[in-house]
Image (cartoon, rainbow, N blue to C red):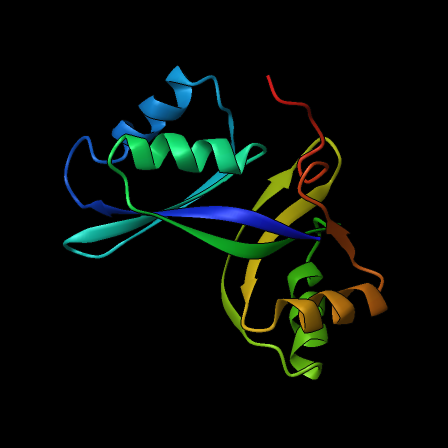
Length: 146
């Protein structure tokens, strides 16, 4: 139920983000979701792909520094208070959210949230006990690799 996420450390300058995206596109690998966080001098590009191992090899061969992290993806109703219910559940389990990113799927009225927890197994257990849909790495975003 944990998903492998690739984190790339990029210099904060024009073209830095397009280089790894170009490598993945040339290899025919589709990015399912991503997040970019920055500071003045560098950024962290976080990527989820179905074939994360192949993506990691391609990126490293292309000169990127890649870190693999386990994250948890969940599906929740897209409505006011949906995130709060999730946060309350993991807080009661003593789990800390290190970071997260999310997006809404308007057609299904659901949101997908990707979390990095300090204790992912405890978080998964708490989420499941509260009836939350925890997604696996292949079904996470409901479509096949193009």
